Image (tube, rainbow, N blue to C red; front, side):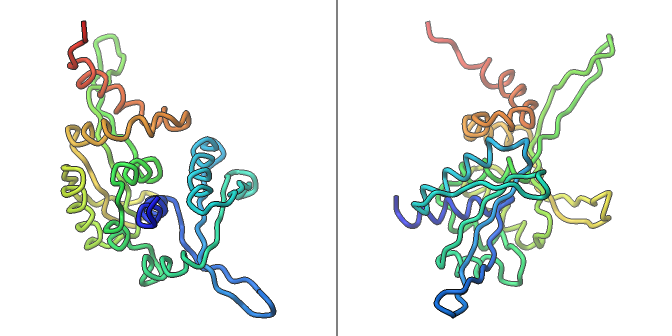
Length: 233
């Protein structure tokens, strides 16, 4: 695998919950500064983080071991490397992650978006109420929380989606009910969501812990896409 491809996969893990940081250690009575990559997920997503650990193990050609975190409420892993030091400095120019710095180096957009949606995305369903009182899902759209990203970085992200995947999310502002902080989020139409889903669904649905989260878009995909595919006789 080319180094550019390895870098792309590593940075894809940074888009969502992955965190690049500095790590100091002592070597021969000298302090050496490394870069570190840490990923943490809830225990209910143990299959998902195990998969990520396997990817990182191959990329760094070493065994990445999982450990418990947050008083047993999460599972996490870390890997350190001098190579990551430069990427920490580049991707966090003001001490905060800047998506616009990461996206230009992504060579596997479908993989990156799958990770991003599993980490920071969600599916917004649309329900109609039937006469018997039951609810029926008639639509589903992707949303991605961008959290502390600047509006400029989010605008760059919209352009990246247009060029890489042929979809154009809208930028909306969301106010956190707990912190009262307002920040931009990406909202996709159902048509664009289905375009993305068709490209990433096999990767996502391979993780049992993600099947429930993406059940609404999968239901709509089966109705609007799979049922329209003519069967082979």
